[in-house]
Length: 171
Figure 1 (cartoon, rainbow, N blue to C red):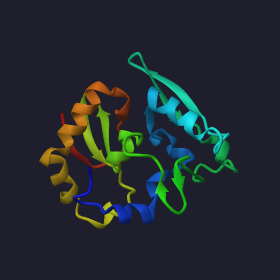
Figure 2: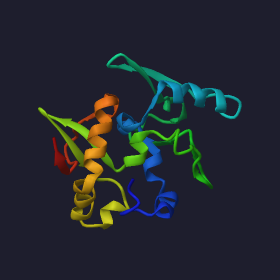
Figure 3: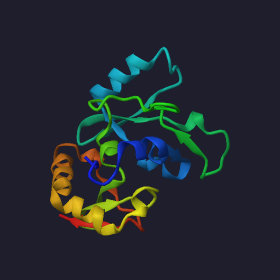
Figure 4: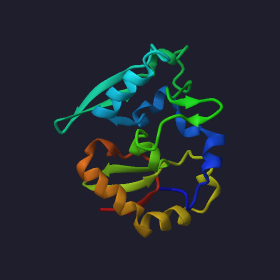
């Protein structure tokens, strides 16, 4: 979805978005119930500690990766990698299994006061090298509407707005 502004090779080398500080666990992507159950079965032998926190949103169940066991200190800045990040190959998930949050990162759909907005995560090293207008154009040229439409049937992807996230589109 972001191939017009980010090369896959750039993302594969960086992998910043695949690590989560304790203080940013709210950004850990959610998996639809069916995908979560499929991944639990497929990876149980290789990743016995892997688990998902079950979350219910609008009557639907989702899974959020449980990463707390990976932290070794109490430092809020300590990072833990996604269960599906391979150090050599990058993300091992198929496009079908990859969470929508991951497909659109560093974009986020957020609730800001009484509006829904498409905002940009300000920490992506690759996107930070580009003018904000580049991401704004991508969102305006259809990606923003695609994300918004997806959120109507998958409301769990809508996060609470965080200060410092530039708003690219409002609904």
